[in-house]
Image (tube, rainbow, N blue to C red; front, side):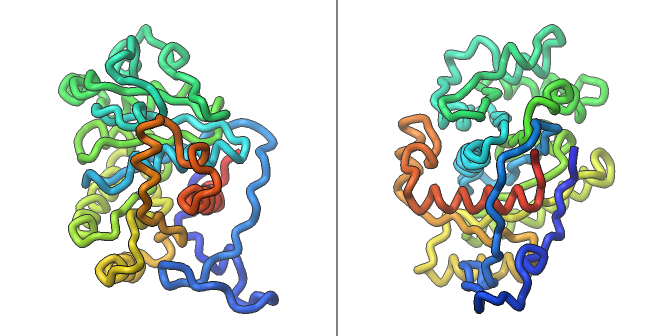
Amino acid sequence: MPRPTAKLTAEDLAPVSDPSGPRKIGPTGRPLPDLPEVLPPTKTGPAQVIAMCNQKGGVGKTTTTINLGAAIAETGRKVLLIDFDPQGSASIGLGVQPHDLELSVYNLLMQRDITPAEVIQATRVPNLDLLPANIDLSAAEVQLVQEVAREYTLQRVLEPIIPNYDVILIDCAPSLGLLTVNALTASNGIVVPLECEFFALRGLAMLTDTIGKVQDRLNPKLEIVGILGTMFDGRTTHAREVLDRVVQAFDERVFHTVIRRTVKFPETTVVGEPITTYAPSSQAATQYRDLAKEVLARCPAG
């Protein structure tokens, strides 16, 4: 799997002496990079595995996972979205009812005779597949404690399908438990959705500490791909101050793209499809397509 270039700077993407004139300043207070258009892939795989992780709930993590996956799929890349949250929110957001599932990611983790092909479902979005979850997954947290090499269980079940996809996105549960550690161990990149609000900022230090421990003890290839400001309302001083503090602390690890608040996201959950197909010309859809460009620039896939 290719490693993400986590230290990619804006200067790498567009030179400061831009002959077309000064670059526009983005919501993060930095000049927006001149991102190249994403070309269709010449081959499929091996997949870049990215964990969408934040132990605080309600930060737009599942919404980001679904819409980033759909935006990357629009580029012609094969994308697998793994719902790794017992609440099954990512499954619901793609039109799958968790209580109707005969097989889920839980069965794949805990039963050796189950193959990924039996559990993975195609979605209504071309090139986007789903590995669904339901409340059964909550039992895995307890049962995995008894397993040998329990932190590597997800990595083991993903190995056969790495060549079949360009990007695999894991929607982690809002905790730092064993399931999240499994996701970080199986990944080579992390995207941290961060609500532009003070309490979300406080939890970031705990998350980076956990990431450091996983890097040291389980997965030295793990890198932070980027931190994504979500639910941003530029009209409020508080949101702008929080985003400024994140940029000061993490600099170029913060994505230039910022996801703004919109009433469209709750509507997409009801209809069970991403914003890129529900409202393809909306500002929110454009923001996720821009995010997809940034992610693919930092983590070349395909």
